[in-house]
Length: 310
Image (tube, rainbow, N blue to C red; front, side, top):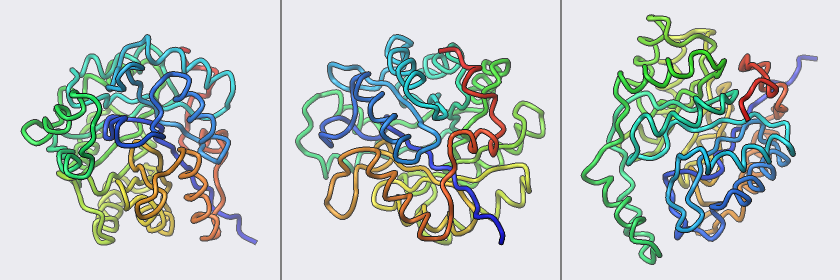
């Protein structure tokens, strides 16, 4: 009997898309972020993708002082793969965004593959009771601003982390981002296997239609062949439908409160672990097995949890 395919679940615990006023379940403090990550890992996430926040008002915070406390706790209490963001927030410089990954040397760090319009402003119509002025300013700023990820920015992050042994979760919000990855690979700046995270449903990026998912997969197959591992995330209400589509096509999946606040129509997910369990149910219903952290390390060819800088 053939072995069941192992699927990696990544959980994006908290992030820069949603703000604290949008859900009472979004982790903000270091303790909340650590507990949420560990809970997600216990539910079946092999990889936890981490941002940090100011504990007073919840704004994105990329300082080392915000990351260190929860990184140490997660390492002590879980064997999961830690993935540190270099995306940070649209308001940060690339140097700010890259610093936690360069200092803490995680097994995985995220890397956005192109400058883009990143439209969060429609959330102002859905979430009218925002507690902090920065939340309103941040969302409104996405109407007139953009998320800067130039070729120079991408090269900076790749070269700054070149000696860390860190592999990248390469976030591709559109087809052109795959070609940017191919360009960097042709120049030898990034090495296979590439962990390609295709992002669907962000305003300004590729949409969530099944044809969009298929197009992203076909293009990546043509460009990278066997040199990449595919994963997907669907923003908002598209989270599980995109996960199911991609898993049936051979992909891995990402869920978590960074990407979606929901556990069904109009129902807030009460934890990251709840979304992991929902994804796990879908995947196991498709006859797939959930990869453990060590299996994920083998699939992604990671350096190991004992080689990090925290």
